[in-house]
Length: 352
Ligand code: FAD
Ligand code: MG
Image (cartoon, rainbow, N blue to C red; front, side, top):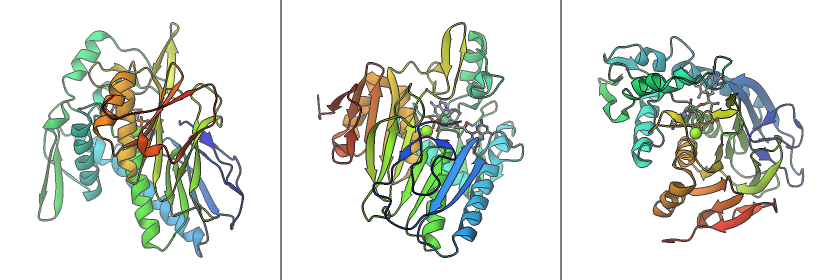
């Protein structure tokens, strides 16, 4: 389950602990209509403001989440992901939305030089981190699984409006680092199409804000202090009509013989990334991109992530290092405030 925060939003204070903290500045505005469900292996909370027919809209949103989970989950035997994994290298018909997610995933894998990879399913299935069966695989098992992770070999095609995909034999998808973001984006589109102008979509801390806050300014998302109890935050992001996503090793992990193994895998080694980072937050209008980028930046780690961010200066990111630095991109300077004095703040300069 996930990370970083809990809600202090007007009405429904703290029924669940969630990943990024939303703070209502003044409590101004109508109380939201809220739904809370366990979906996607996490707590999903949707809050709609100022909308007539909110109850039906929330039900419709939950139906959309369930239908997309049924396509993307590796734990649902009839999902597109599982059917592709089991197809033994054959072309397989998939839903248009799975095709879109795969297409985006391949572009994001390319952008991040494979630090985000949609094809780590064989590796994550060995570790099973986040489940009671989590274990440390042998070197041989990892080496064998890594043979089937070259995402550039994934093929997609469209024929008479029908979508098909083919994975190399032996490859297994795991869309866990991007699908929540994609689903947040799909929910946002549905809400907008139905006339909702103000809402918070929280998929286990993968946040997407629709419109502005009830007091008329940006929403405020508190970023979870890694290694501290949920709800303690180190800084605040102000966000309007955008997504705020955090990845970190601090909630989904297990310990064996005194070693902590977390769930963000370095595709180069097939093992939990030795990152030097304690958390990564990305702010992006496109929640799928935010989701995949935070995972990728975490894998790149304290050395390579700043380099990548300098090169791709449109990315808005906040990195927290193991040695207690908060490193931000110039693009978040105006929307981020550090609230924890135990961290020192660095703004990434260009070409440093
Ligand atoms: P992120 O950093 O966004 O993603 C990390 C996850 O992505 C890992 O858990 C792994 O699955 C995968 N991953 C690891 N390293 C990489 C990498 N380098 N590149 C790409 N991917 C990587 N959880 C359950 O416990 N039970 C469920 O039944 C369940 N069903 C789910 C169904 C769907 C459709 C989705 C989207 C998620 C589901 N989850 C489930 C949760 C899933 O395991 C989450 O991805 C997990 O909670 C981690 O998400 P995150 O945002 O914390 O981390
Ligand atoms: Mg992610």
